[in-house]
Image 1 (tube, rainbow, N blue to C red):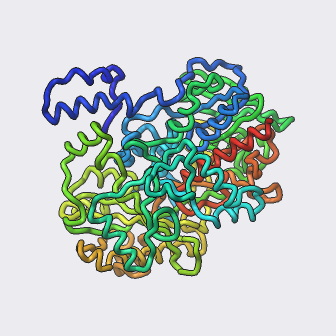
Image 2 (cartoon, one colour):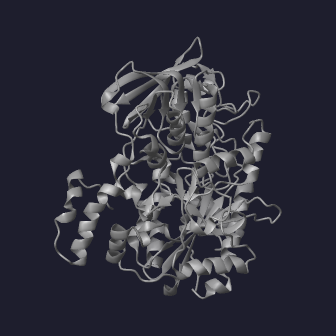
Image 3 (tube, rainbow, N blue to C red):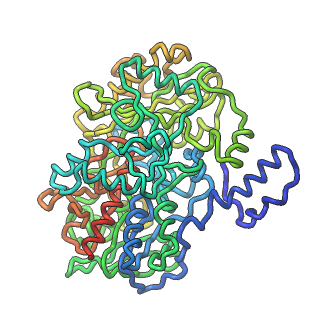
Length: 609
């Protein structure tokens, strides 16, 4: 794994005289650090300047995808002093290199969360638990994800408004999406589909690999359209990558206001709770631990909670806002009884493993690829390979709205490093892991990721204790419905198998692998019951938890915030992140989360003007 180098090594560019490839590579590697992990692209860290009793107009808890965008809007208004508190630090070099996104999620730059063991899901993974990493650094999950930019579809947002959330229809949210976007992709400039005047760079690329062409040929054989951009069908998605490096939300949106005197950023700042006046039912500020000091910092106008779908409900409950019985059980005084932590939704996935012939991928020399990247920001390390190919289908063919998403990962023959990273990330059990190692020793592997887009099941986030440093209890809720979720994924698996049997894939001798799932060995491989068992045992996360602070009107008993993202019954407090989604969007959730940050910033500016 590439690590952060000392700042002094930035001066090394002129020190090497050797013309050898290795020495040139080392030279470029050291010189590239300045641009890859340059703290000057972010606001300076002011955590040593924060004093107990300090006052700001707004305090934003979390500098992730939504928090960075809402902060940008507040600071650009020019009216108020804004403090941003981030539990993590600055992104490392590893986060900046697109191909290394798997490497990040097993580092100290994440919240290393595990789900509570369940009888319905994750049963065959280590300790019966799914691994749920979340970003713990500037940019949040936009600094650790696969950089896919997917908005979701019309039905997602119109449903939000139809459930009582005024202003959240498709037409309105599209305006906010476009205001964030800066379309760089040359092949899409003739369309008005994406914004061109925003800050967030959106690029695309085409992988020069046989497997890329085979995937797109195969879906055409099955009757699915190949599109130029996001829609019902298959396409090469836009990504938040610019000049071969990750464009995380903090770099883009906080970076744009980094020189403002109205912005103060504190990293490695752990917010322990929101201070709420019990009589006024009004947020006053936050209690935050910076280093070894715990202090109180005050927000004269609002506290904005943007800590993500797992940490925002945790902080609310620690502050006395949450389900009455649960808080009392943990010894926390209840200030407002709300269904915080309920309604948890995530995109459950099943990873279908298949082997391919040598023709699927061209041979590469890692030293040459590294040199290409560090010298020109090109080559394999500048993108995420065929993971940019996404497919959205309706498995019942009854709707224009998808219920399954496909994305793909390839692992080169005998690439145990990548295989081990993927298996660690999934929390795979040893027997399946060993079987895949044997297959990978002789074959390229194709991982078809089958994503359940509109889960019926619901989970919950709870407190382990009233200790703010304890991890929250995560009940995924996967497959706790009446069986509809399992059957939808089963249909998705059958389509993926059909894809591997097309003429296009026959050229690569594609074959689905029986990975030897211990709890499913008594069932006939490839039967419906086998796949139902497989999903129960190896089904895992797409890293998209949402909806734990549901947006809804006051007459909705499950609602935590209203349509302006204000917490019901508590003044001067909003939640601005993916936790407010009433229902999860149909696709990767990072783009919608940044859209939520944009709309929230506009609402707050209007409310205080």
